[in-house]
Every structure is written in C-alpha cells, then in structure tokens.
Image (tube, rainbow, N blue to C red; front, top):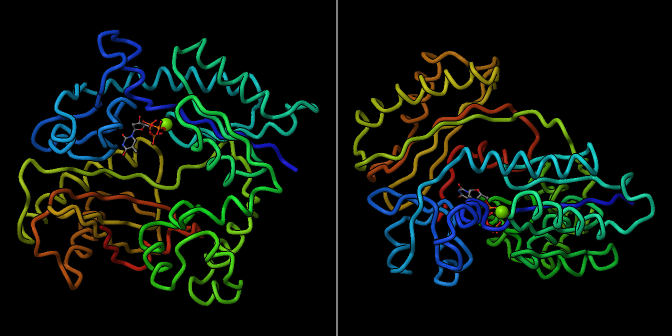
Length: 355
Ligand code: TTP
Ligand code: MG
C-alpha cells in the first residue's frame, strides 16, 4: 500500500501578500484587478466569508465585500515561495510531482520507514511555516485521488487522513464534479444520466460506464471505487501550452475575432519555441461576454509550432458552423499533445459550453 501526501498552500497569493505587508493581515484581501476587466486570482479567507472567489470579476467582488483590499499580483514573490516549499518536499523524498506553484503530490512510501505518513505531513507543514511564514493544508492517503480530496477537508492549515477502509464511503458522498477527470462537460452529461454523486457512480456497472463514456468510463468506474494507480511522477512532461487575451472591450463579428488571432498565434509560437514544446492538437477557446465558454479543437498528423500554420488553423476553427454571434470577452489558443487523458474527451467533442 502506497503512502501519498498532497500539499496545497492556503489562499496562496493572498497569504504571501499578507505576510509581506502587515497592514493587510486579518483583513479581506483580493489579489488581482478591481476595475474594468479585472479578475480576482485568489482571496484571503477573510474575504471568502463574503463570497469572494477565484476567477470572479473584480467589480462583483467589490460589491460583495465593499471593504475588500485589492492587491496587484507579484509573481516573483509567489515563485520564490514555491521554490522554498519544493525544497521542503525534496528533503523528504525525490518523488515530488508539482501540480502548480502551490500544490504537489509526494510519494512518501519509502521515506516513512514504518512511521505514520501523517507524522511526515505534519513535519512538512511545520517546516513550510518555518521556512516561508505561510500555512499549507495536507492530505494523506493511499493514492493521489484521495490524498487530494483529503487536503481540501480542513482548509486552511488542515491535516487530514483518509484510510483505505473509509475511502469508498467517503467517495459516495461527493458530487461527481470532484472526481478526477470529470470536467464540466462530463459532469453535465453524467447528471443528465442521473449520476450526481459518488454513490450514483458506484451503482453503475463498468460496462454501462464504458458504453456512455468510452475509455474514460473505466477510469470513472475505478475512481468511484477508490482505485487509482496513477504514480507520482517527478518529471512530468508538459502536455500543453496556451496563451489568451481578455479584451478591453468585447469583440463582435468574425473579422474582429480573426484579426485578434494573429497576435495570439504569434505569441503562442514564440512560447512554444522558448519552451521547446510542440503538440498535434490546437484548441481555440472563446469566452463570451456572458462568461459562457466555447472550445474547439483540431488534431493534426504532425506537431504544430509554426505561427502561420497556427493562425490559419485557428481561423478554420473559428469558422466552424455555429460561430458565436454573441460578443466575445476573451480568446485563447493552446497546443497540446494528443493523449488518453479523460478530460481530453471534452476537447474532442469539439464544442463545449459551460455555465
Ligand atoms: P488554489 O490552490 O486553487 O487556491 P488558493 O491557494 O488561493 O486557496 P486555497 O488552496 O486555500 O483554497 O490556487 C493557488 C493559486 O493559484 C492562487 O493563490 C492564485 C492562483 N490562481 C489563479 O491565478 N487563478 C485561479 O483561477 C485559481 C483557482 C488560482
Ligand atoms: Mg492553494
């Protein structure tokens, strides 16, 4: 039986800001922009009490919490804190898989040497606090799925263990959106089939789920039973790279959208070049003024990296039937490797609309 820890920093950007500016401590803080097109990247727990959340427009956040203090992001500071926590992890095990700046899986099976993994998780939390002045939440379990769910149970500054004999019961109470690989489109599909919770998912047979969701069906069937053998991968290869732009004013009409694709394609090509990455799938993301999201993808027989080719393909995606007539708030372009990732199915559907 493996011992996996998932660590996730609490209100990460906001906590760094409160640490570095004592006048922000104990107060509702949002990191991000307050005016016009500004978006909240994250909010302190004081601000969350008012309902302020990540990805919320700044103007709405201010309405919910008039005394909210907006702070511009300082990515260098977040990267520095991220490096510091990674050092803490690596002191325990080389098997560290970062998911983002503030989050990682650790496989501590070998590092435990008979000690409870919970003790290691507590030591890691203490060390993070000593090194960075920040709090983290940790989840301990026997696979990634449950470790990640566990780290979310007692945020902030939480520590939770989900033991194998409790896992299936725990999963039965969860909404399906919380399961790995279930994105918004799949969730909507599941709900339309009467699958709303882990318990519902557990009742469906493997054959039934495979019929409804193809290869991913088996993945969902296994997840519902707490079967997750995905290894902690320290050198996870990049799978995608994307760029996007939110416009100062909503765009209307095909020509305006098409014009904006050129700088996006150029920027994407440059980033691909710098990262030494290429992939066969191009995805165009369109966020409408009412925040509905449409994504369209195309997969080629060769890796994409050339700006002109990307631009041309993006225009083709834009011209697919059902081109958005509504005003557009944001355009994004991304390249990804074609893979068997369950959420890729959503891209393959070609068009996804989410609320
Ligand atoms: P999260 O771990 O999702 O959020 P958090 O650390 O702020 O809060 P908590 O984990 O306690 O719930 O994301 C980590 C950081 O990533 C977050 O501080 C800001 C950034 N972020 C964005 O820039 N945009 C987003 O939409 C989200 C969700 C996070
Ligand atoms: Mg976090």
